[in-house]
Structure formats: C-alpha cells, structure tokens
Image 1 (spheres, helix red, strand yellow):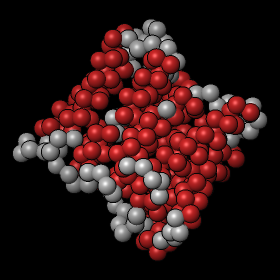
Image 2 (image 1 turned 90 degrees about the horizontal axis):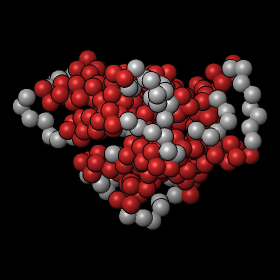
Image 3 (image 1 turned 30 degrees about the vertical axis):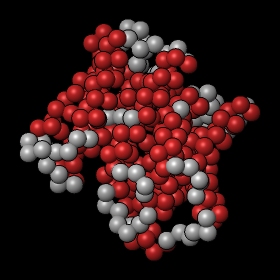
Length: 289
C-alpha cells in the first residue's frame, strides 16, 4: 500500500475528490461517457493495485452481496451522470453543495429503510440543509444572475438522491471488504452504463486535452483517490474521517470561487454555511432527543 501517514492519505483523497469538477467541466464529452470511462479506468487502477499488493478478490463475498452490489453499482453510475451534468449547467460550488444534500436525504429515509429513529437533532439538520439548498439555488432572488441555474441545481439534487441510495444500500453489505465492494461497484456501474451510453446518439470525438482530462478523472480522481481513501480508513477514527470529509466540498467551493472566478452571492454563501453546518451538527453523538 502507498507509504504515507493515514491522515495525509485521507486529506489527499479529499482534496482530489474536491477538484474533480474543475476537470469534468472542460471534458468535451457527454456526462454518461465521462461516467463510463471513469468507472472503467477507476476499476482497472484498483485491480492493478491489488495485483501489486498480491491480494485477491473475494468472489464469494461478491456472490453473497450480489443484489446489493448491483443496486449500488447502478446508482453510482447514474449519480456520476447527474453530478457531471450539474457541473456543466451551474457553478462547481453550487453543484457540489446541492450534491451534499445526500446525507440529508439519507436522514429523511433512514427511518423507513434502516429503522433509525428520527430525532429532534436530525429534524434541525434537515431543516437547515433544505433552507441552505433554497439559498444556494437562489430561489428567493429569482435566479436573476443565472448563477445557480435551476437546471444545474435539479441535476445536483438528482445526483444527491442516487448517492443517498448508494449510502443506504451499502449499509446492507455483509462480510465484504471496502476495497472488494468498491471494485465490484465500479465494474457493475461500468457494465450498466455501457448499453445506456451505446444507445445515446453521442460522438466519441474529443480533443487531446479532453482525453487527458478524462484519463486524469479515471486514474487519479477515481482509482488513485479511492486507493488513498480506503487505505486510510483502518487507521483513522470515524469522527476524524467524518471531519476530513468536509475538505471535499470546501475545496470545490474555493476552486470555483478563486480559480474559476465563479461568483457566489452573500445569500449563496449563507446557504453553503447552512448545508455544511447541518452536516457538521449531525456528526455529534446523538442525545436523548
């Protein structure tokens, strides 16, 4: 495994994840095509890493969890499509923040799927996140500036819904390692997306710059970043991993604002604080509320 401290691995992975929008924005291919290649290259990189580490896949665990892996793998593929569409229709910051409604969606549906209690704290977090989403979407000012295009926001919310289904379905996985489940889901996502992409009337012609960016998204933002992330989990506590996860959206917001000069209004900054703040509050241990 890559010889780096676990903390540095996790932070590096989050920084890489947070920069993906910057690369996807300039790839001259359809979102479904980007998602397909990302899944294929990401799975190939992880398989290569396992061969270097002389580790083998646990196919018996794959068979035991086949249905859940199929559901989550498909959800991952379409989650990527909608997220990449959001990047093209709105700013990277707005797309990322609407995408980060996924934990809020999980909280809303967890009483039905996971039989978890809906507490007062969770209700507060949901309300804060939803208000934040409305502020990010610029609903109250009528989207006059075009920043936070409603179409991009809707794509971001769809991506969040699919990602929430990935989170929930993974709760039902048993006796399978994180690396095994990730490789299986990437392969399944690729196989499910393949006929979808083939049926789309999209050209595969792209310039050299787009191809290099696509290779980076697959190899670095998927394979390498996942390898860093999963190799850090065993040595980090759950609260630390949860805290570091905020590096992803913060990185996206900073790149969007300062590198691409994509404007965010004061109202949208307030929305960002509410969404990220609700996620932060939800990390505290639950009380008796």
